[in-house]
Length: 182
Image 1 (cartoon, rainbow, N blue to C red):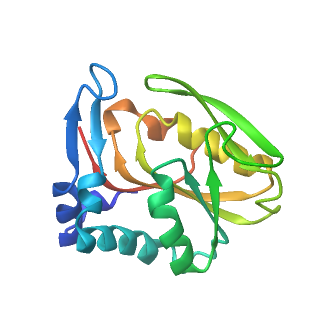
Image 2 (spheres, rainbow, N blue to C red):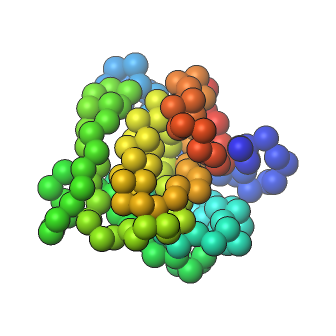
């Protein structure tokens, strides 16, 4: 599901505030820079509001945000819908016992970790990140949550790069995005 195809004027405004930086962090990558969106409080609020409108009545008890930009959107969504926020972090960033999941990025390999006990069996989870490219990071996040017994209801991203077909790797889980970038 994508909000980018509806005629909500907030979507056009959000898309216009995302800066594309060529060849960052590596040659050939067209980096989708959301910091320009964050500089506009109205657009930032509209971004969060669009996600909240979608998830406020879906009985979600966990919003899991992927480091680092999932930490920008995840907490305000969690607060607004009455869910807890669970950070999914890079290796060795969380104290205490963790479970880990390795994955492949569009330009390398990485790992996500989550505290053991952060998610209870049968909790309904939403995974939040800023962008889906190849889908590796979202798949790792879903695997962590499902290993802990949670039901992943949906993944939510601000931006989708549909040409990289990351949506196809999500094992049939719904993906909601606000804008597409080609």
